[in-house]
Every structure is written in C-alpha cells, then in structure tokens.
Image (tube, rainbow, N blue to C red; front, side, top):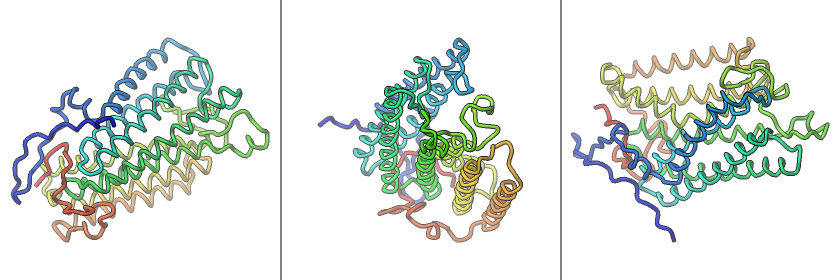
Length: 366
C-alpha cells in the first residue's frame, strides 16, 4: 500500500500558564515546500488551478466569444479560483489532523481526482465552444455532463467524510473548534445546494428539452447578470447560496481570527467565553443568511430586487444578530457557553477541548 506522507512537524511549542503546550504556528512563515507537503494531491490541484485561472483571465481578453450571456472563459476562471481555495483550505486542515488522518488523506485525494475530472470537462467544452453544465444536446455532451455529476458526487461524499473526521479532532479552544466544524458543515450544505440546479424544470420536462437543469429560477439561463459574478439580476439564482455556503469554511474561521485580533486592543473581547458567544452569533447569522438567500432564489427573485417580504426577513436577521452581539458583550466574563452549545459542535469529542492538538494560525489571546 502506498505510504501516506506525514504532515510537516509543528514548530517548537512552549508551555502556557496551565502547563499545556502552546502552539505558535503561523501561516505567514510557511514556505511553499512546507505548504505543498500538507496534502500533495490537493496542493498539486491548487497549483494547476492557479495556472488555469491565468489562462482563463487571458481568455477573457483574447477570446471574445459569449456563451449563455457571459464571456466563454468566465466559467473556467471562476471554477478554477473556487477549486484553488477549496484545495488549499482542505489540504491545510487535513495536515492538522491527529486522528483518522490516513482516512482523511485518502478522502482528500478522492476529492482532488473528482475535481480534476470536472475541470477537464469544463475546459474541454469551452475549447469546443459549447456549455458543460446541463448540456444534453448530443450523446457526447450528455455523457460529459453526467460524468461531471458523478465526479462531484464523489467530491461531496469525500468532503462529508473529512467533515465527520473534524469532529474527532479538537481545536486549541472551543471558538476555533466551533469555527472549523460549523464552517465545514455549512460548506457541505452549500455544495449540496448545487444539486438543486441539476433538477430539470417543468418546462424542460414538458418539452423534452436538450437542456436539463438551470441555475436561474423562473427564467432561462443567460439573461442579464452582475458584472464578473454573472448572478442574475432579473430572476432567482441558485448559484448565490451555493457560493455563500461553500465558502463558509473560509469565512467563519476568518471571523474567529478577527475576533482574536480585535481582542488585543478591546478588553471586552479578551474573555474566551465572550468570543465564543460572538462566534455562535456569527454562525447563527451565517445560517440565517444562507437560508434567506436560498429562499429568495427559489422564489425566482433577483438578489438585487428583493421584495417587501424578503426585506422584512432580512431586517429580522439583522435585529437578531444585533441582539445577539449585545447579549454576548454584556455577558462579559460570565458562564462559559461550551457546555450549552454541546460537544457535537463546539466542544471536544472524546477529550479535553482545551487540550487540542491541531496547529493554529496564531496563538490564542489570553
């Protein structure tokens, strides 16, 4: 059996005030060789996607063909950037695992292979001058489209397995553990929302159309859209919640790090319990926004033209977030919420949540 490469050894640790090792790992000091060793298949994919993104940007200027209302190289460019972010994030996370790391390594490899298969079809169809998604105009196009669906199914399952493994690997504190686990779950949900697009519309079924599925709700794909993103400005667009959900894995942990950074200058944020409460509010807000965007898209409503009902729902979310933030700050150094939010999300499973073994980006604020 092929040996699974070991992740980079963590730098020397020093004990904190409780005598526990305190990690001082910083991504800023990681060399390319060290980063590449996190997970070679995923990092190789990331490098390849960087190259595809460069080619795509050149194509945006050099190739003036338009497909479904967008420059023909827009889709491979956006997909390359998204896969690059996905690959680097999961490669880094897998490298930090201390439990079930071998299983996670293989799941990361499965995801990398699946994403390569998807990108080969996307770029290949661009070179052929036709669409990759929902295209059943010929037996070849239909086979390529279905192969993409199968490959993404494998990617989703592999991501699910790694998310489960995250629940067996505690972080250095409850807030970071919550951030990574909640981010993983929401990213998985965001990926799953993409499957809503492959369901043929009623009109497509009635007319036995050569296009099976759509990202626009209420209208045909290819209408007016936002610059760069292409999200519909005249109808609902399922790509929006799909995108927002997938990138929760980056945004929620980033929110945790921002809170730690702000705590250096704001005494109100220095208590770990306060930062944990604020992160719970952040995760709740993210879930609410994701649900709101999905609901809006399924109603066939453009992101730039919300109706009164959508506006009222958004106002409720904003009010709830504001109330949650105020309550968290007023709690001060009150009772720790770790037991309240449950070990299934924010606490350690099978161990002490304060004695995690994952490497961290910056040392915890004390």
